Length: 127
Image (cartoon, rainbow, N blue to C red; front, side):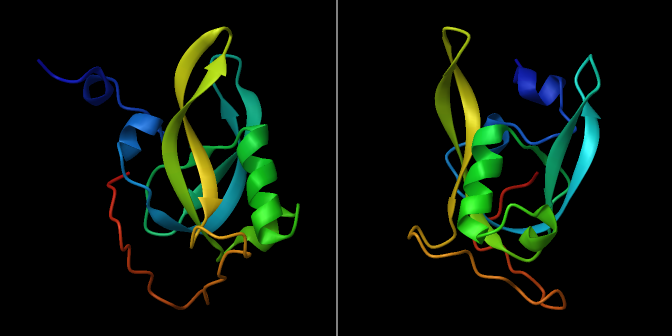
């Protein structure tokens, strides 16, 4: 029997796309897009070499701003972060989510990559 995530693919990155991987990703851009049934305008972060974007919630947006040292999303381009799947409480239920952490696992700002550099994905995840 197929996995329901495979039967109902999403245009955006989901926790199930990551599995137990914690890929190092390089920020390409942030765009504001209509999301969900209500078409609410939300920020979506895209990564170099990846098709799916991650719809940013307040928690992840604040964490990236903290890691990069800027709340201006234009400053995030070229910065490397790690993303990983975990769980959180939402509406009284435990649900899967994606969270952000520093590229190297420490508290230093993420490395900014020159735009002309070819990024080699050390922990490839097809998304």
